[in-house]
Image (cartoon, rainbow, N blue to C red; front, side, top):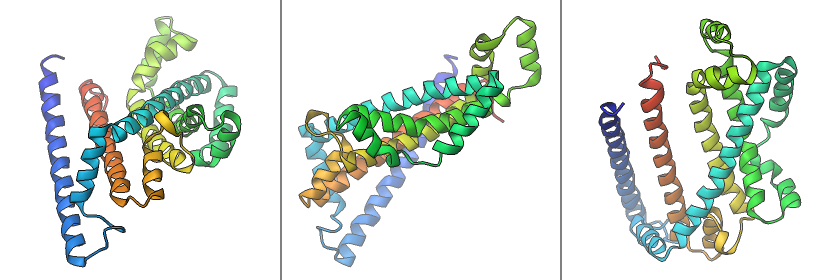
Length: 266
């Protein structure tokens, strides 16, 4: 494991370098498009002004605090969604009642976007971080449950038979055998849940957000829009995109470190 760690880190660094190069190329195209087409700055600012605003807000802590607050609530919501997804998938694999329950819940709630239940969350929890965590948990729960349930049902039958011969039954079988075997599906569901949660939390903060010291990046963007600070709006969007790239890189590293290294992926 120790010998493979440098190789995994090198692969991650190369992927990050390629994506950084692409991002710089897009910034150059953006700059020339604004200059050549003479687009008004209040509509589309130049990347230079956006970078200046981004740097100022990072130094002042305004954007850093907003991103920290958003990521904290996002991790809480996705974590709760992961736990709920594991519970529903385990109940589904251990009981026909659980299978029917999961099928009904997924068919009813999965098509509903997280933002659609935002009014209910506001009624139940008020304009508090708990409302945002609830919405993110809702958005992350269903892709996690579907992916983990699929992973449980595709575990090698021979492996299941071996586990039962060793005396593994019920929740212990799920915990010690099926959950590790379903790791590729779990990671896939986690990536989808992260993407759903990230979009949901930004949208929720744009709709009402949480003001003051607990305000997130969605509130940061909405406030900039309210005061017609277009470079600040773009700086928030750039920060969101950058976090997305970092998250995708992290997920790829985890996948190489676990799924690919253990031979669980062809």
